[in-house]
Image 1: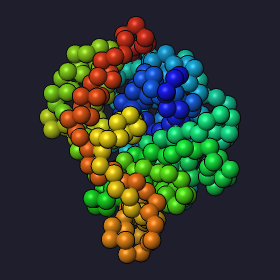
Image 2: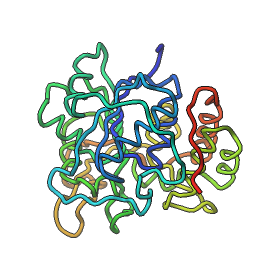
Image 3: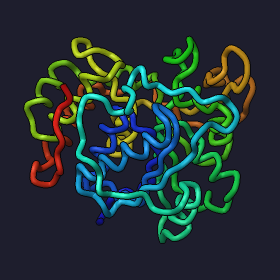
Image 4: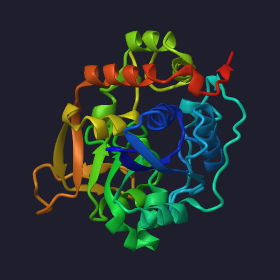
Length: 317
């Protein structure tokens, strides 16, 4: 694909993940080299099944999918089924997928994909960062093949799991610490912007009447326990893709960001805002977003998806 961004996506679908994957699989500006799954919003068995449901829905059997970590590095695993439903993608009855995972664990698939690439790849991580941390620990030689890492996670302004911790980092703070201190070029798209990038009630009405993909996403959003249909729904993971395509719509500040791995603040991402403890920075942090531009872009992305190009299921009762 000419002028497309070569991407490895690491994900834990999840309803907002499903929205991001819908864009990733249908926008030719993304060249999807691999999708890997991890335990996060629901178990890795369910997140893997959900990715396959989506690659089947969008008829993208060409996209390699690999199953990843079943649990965090150290911290006990806890899911977010209360937000995303028991399956992880409540609200829509997808057709049984015919797409299948590759017979290679996620970390090895990531390594092989990176080393085989003629160009550097962008890694987008929108679940717990367990797979990515294990990749960097076991195969440090891949760092030379990673152009940049864009993560959904973290927050400088308060959490959604605890008063200070965002879910993805809270799920595996030890992995987040390894990734953040890796020396890679990392951009953190956290709650500071994703809680502002709400898909508005007006946008959701438009989406529901748009096409079969819009119908599918509306079903998911109605079952999504984050935000509300009236006040708006946060599209956390989709922001990573909007950032890659339109970085000018975000305000970015560079900080040294530490990850707390023990105690009552576990999972907190603490920025050295006043440059008191570090002489360098390690993370580009998104702090503001043009939310109206995000809504307009997302609707345009979904509007472009042709009904004939998908294999639909049906809305859940």
